[in-house]
Length: 490
Ligand SMILES: *[C@@H]1O[C@H](CO)[C@@H](O)[C@H](O)[C@H]1NC(C)=O
Ligand SMILES: *[C@@H]1O[C@H](CO)[C@@H](O)[C@H](O)[C@H]1NC(C)=O
Image (cartoon, rainbow, N blue to C red; front, side):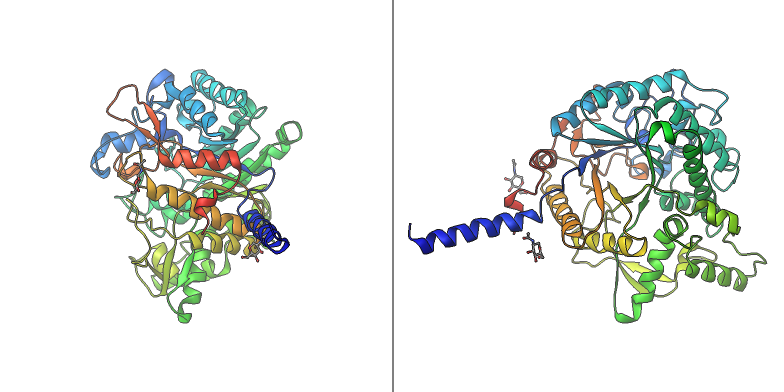
């Protein structure tokens, strides 16, 4: 080869290697997959488990679930958890995010009666993960409230902040020697809305603009209670980390007149939880307080529908985090305007949301594919909250099933590329990523009609066989090479 040719070859090779750096995972970055107890476990009344609000909803109001199905058996992970660990191991996963069923541990919700069979189950799961070199990341609450606590009013009842702390103490006592990554709550934004409509998720109670804010208030106090209790009673010995998993998308203003509308989207949907915990000033965002207070007054309420924190409570909640869990699926177009009933959180926010028809669809009406929104939202969070450590605790795509899930493969590779740009180019502090979801599972009110799994589960077969989809194979390659394969780089 001539010298010039050699130089060009070297330039091309080093140039390519350099470009690839942007699409390589940093050392120490943890990759894995996620699930939730009600969606996969089954064993709904096995070995002393108590009834939870999803058992109640699916059994007593099955018409709310599109295919009238339930999680009685689901993926049968209560019996097949070793299969799940094997799938993770086969993928080269380093992290498994799963949730604990409160009523499996405390059948009545309260800590006077601990179900040892429930403790055994999670001990076996955690030990199997650790034996296979997989770090457990445990969500304490992924929407399956013990029915007995719902009978007391559920999350709008502030006493649940104490009951949740008591439940968390049982978890730290039994599992905290081995579990070092804890998430108090998954998507409070989603389960607050379970108190805003009687066609929504469990408990499906229609108190919009009131029960939803009361839920947020209790959850924030509960989160802080758990964080402080861990610091007092366990942290020195166990050295774990505690965060909360918040779901949010990017809001793209339709025009320059809609920038404020999209700021309100961030504050009403993310800031309502993140601002009290992750900012220096704490408390709800001022735009949220001002608008709910003003609307409440205009609607004839003599007190605001948004509860107030005392200054002691503001300080108590502030800084109660070791990391932020982020669930990202999709983005929105945002426009200034009023919609939603009186009263409602939507009306308080004053942002009309829509989807760009050019954004690719999934099986879920709410989920269109917007990978660039992921990078923008990661940057929004980093800027608003002082670049906290972030774990992406959920990210995934729904279809109607099938092993050759080309669109899911594209979803993952495009989103991982945007996340890596946020890390390498923008300096966002992301430490790990768990794909949603390890398995096809019970997708709440969509039953088994919308599939998010990277492994197919045959729900017609009593042995619930699991089969890797194309997406699991591509993620396996990514987990093992720790970079996006060249064929997905343009
Ligand atoms: C990463 O991407 C940025 C922006 O596209 C580019 O300027 C930079 O050169 C890339 N880094 C490497 C090491 O290739
Ligand atoms: C999967 O589907 C894509 C197009 O949807 C097709 O190009 C590809 O050949 C299929 N792969 C397999 C293994 O069937």
